[in-house]
Amino acid sequence: MSLLDTVSPPTLLFSLKCLTLRMSTSELTQNTIYSHDTITSEAVQFRVSEICQSSCELSSYNRRDFYKITLWLGGSSQLNYAKRAINIDKPALVFTNPLVPYAWDCDHAHSSGYFCLFTDEFLQPGNRMESLEESTLFKPGGDPVYFLDEAQIEYIRGIFNRMLQEFDSEYTYRYELLRNHLNLIIHEAIKMQPAIAYFTPQNAASRIAKLFLSLLEKQFPVDSPRYMLALKKAGDYADKLSVHVNHLNAAVREITGRSTTTHINDRILAEAKSLLTHTDWSVAEIARSLGFDYASYFNNFFKKHTGLTPMALRKTL
Image 1 (cartoon, rainbow, N blue to C red):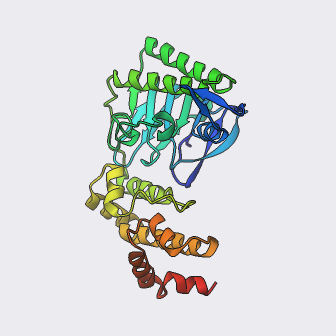
Image 2 (cartoon, rainbow, N blue to C red; image 1 turned 90 degrees about the vertical axis):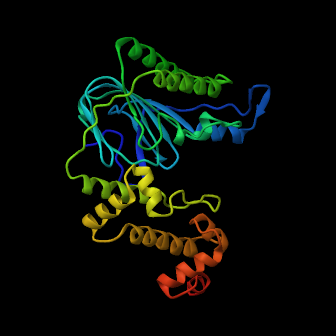
């Protein structure tokens, strides 16, 4: 049912048009020598492709990290958020935030266009001003859909085609060019008027509960002690879904029979047990990565729900 965007798994498979990045061992940009680590980092922070061709390979990307811009050129589709949806029945630019879950329903066989995936760090390296998450195009509750006229279609299609060419080239400064192309698309959209034909879909409570559970699951797994959970309480999730926290709590309880906080605590507890079992991280590192300011808070939380301290559980393994 969904072309590229489903929200249930924590890791999403994206269709990519068999793009192989050939990297040299050292590259220069702005009079600075790129190390191999820098090149590799940028290589995994950006991807561009035509939309869903049957011959594409599937590559896995963590939806927690990647922003997305889609140039939708053909096919009828519907973009669904928690409390609102919009029909996309003509060419459009669509901007999606990795921490705002959505579902994109479409006719797979008649769809065409382009998309690119990128991280905040790729677009704004070094001296960063505004986080993408807070920008006009990507912020929760913003207007992510911009319908295009013929001139805009040709202009933006040209940018995507140039990105495809540069992405697969060996040009030393190709990442700088790709950043510039991305910025051209973003600034072109900022000058446009967003689509306003949103409507409230039926079974809103079910959709809100489903998107909450998907957003919760996207916080996991915690794969580095340097990562910290971005969303820790019901209010954080409500903000991302652009609903009032009381509305979120009511919808989740109506559909699942359990409170929002219970779902959050249970998932954090499951992840804590996994980290204690399968990593050698210290209790303090686990506590920090799961959003606890102090290890003592984590100890109290863990003991309240399991009857054991984290160290006591680890010693039983």
